[in-house]
Image 1: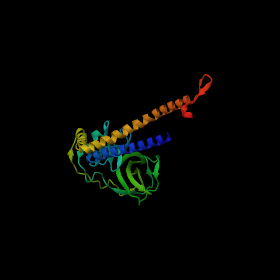
Image 2: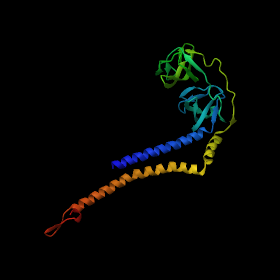
Image 3: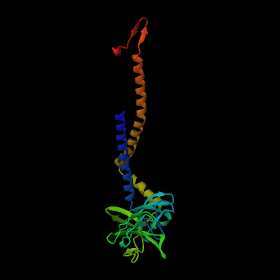
Image 4: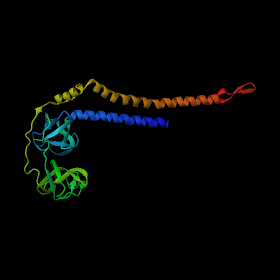
Length: 268
């Protein structure tokens, strides 16, 4: 039984690995579509979750987010490596790869704290920011009034002690303000609808060779069958094992015939 359990674990691990590879294949196919959503209005946000109460930051006007799968009235999206969601109505879907999809600006701060939220009472992710630590600007968010007349925070990416961090710094505690010489992105591509976008994804699968399609189907089907088989088989083995044990017990019983006992020949 122990050997069976180990074998089942190996099969499950192999199945998980195959399904993971298939998942990667799907994601790569989607990424190869090069579909980005352009931000053509101010006040467009990247959200942590597909709801309005989870704002991460306002995406810089005229730049792009890479579009992922739909989720209700939102798209999964990525801006400069930060994953989240955008409202479908807030982006213009375009089929192309921008040379400057994200607003690139590095700066440093005079105040060492990086916060989890846009307020000073939230978790401090690090207190090691200084003018030698370069911050990668992502966007802005209104938060706590750190001073009487300013509640603007910057969402940034940083690397501190070899660890990648994302969080908020207060906008006044900085060198080289990223918005001082902000430049718009004039890149544009063919506009596509959501229907066209996912039709293109389907067409990419259909464009695969027959051999590749068969391989993908088997990669999904075979692990599923094996998992089902090995989930059912142990119970059958247990039933057979119990039946065999009962049979052995019966065969070992002494059978009396008059004045003598008869033994099972297998015991002799």
